[in-house]
Length: 135
Image (tube, rainbow, N blue to C red; front, side):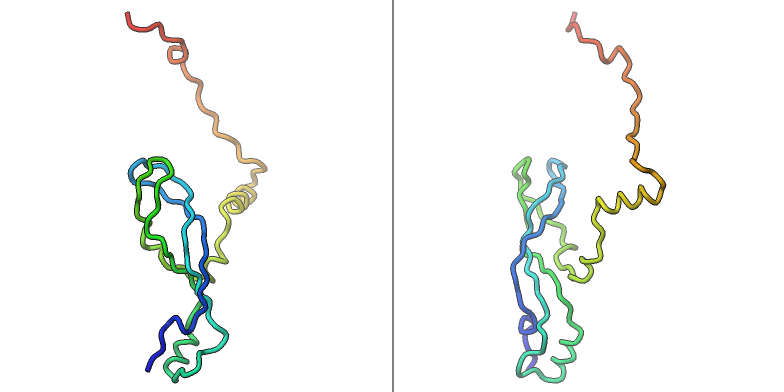
């Protein structure tokens, strides 16, 4: 008889931040998302047959998302988290670069010391005068 998948893993709850955009108000915010981290045990459980041992050799650590919805911090409406991010392998997460480090490395590779801020054109005087109201 085949063993349940959870017999091969140790589970720990975990909270990680996630950036999502509310479909109602279109504001992006960072929300705490609950995950379960499943870590592969060091050896197969007792009573495992040859098929279970072969399956155990191929297993990897992964994160499984618990939360399906979050509440928007601006408008208060609940919205669904995209489902393509419901399972993530831990070994793929460790190699991802940090957004700040990535921007800094790109600027260094381009030869820029400090990324220059884009200069905006001056606003014409007719838009900066104080209005006198309706006549």
